[in-house]
Image (cartoon, rainbow, N blue to C red; front, side, top):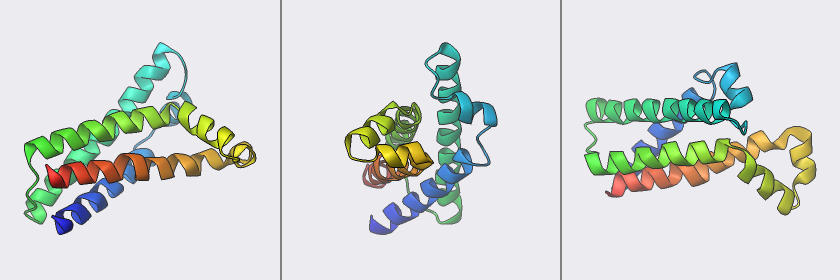
Length: 135
């Protein structure tokens, strides 16, 4: 299971970066946190990009490495990827965290993007990989 976890984590990490950088449009980056219907839809489309690329990464693991990921594990893990990414990208939790943990100055200086990525890795990808590898 350890090797599967490592392979899944790396695959999800790569998919995450593909979805967040070359796979994210300027419109999505600018509006995914807006408190409007358009903002919510934009957020969900962006999260779906993460889910889709993560699914492709898991399929690639199965084909290339013959990694055995169960349908249940993949399903639960991909739902976690989607929901956690959507929640983090609404930006309110990151702003709250930074403002209440002595990081307001770092946030004002543009540090929110770094805390956002740390949250995606620690609260999104890591639990998803654990779920996928263990179910």
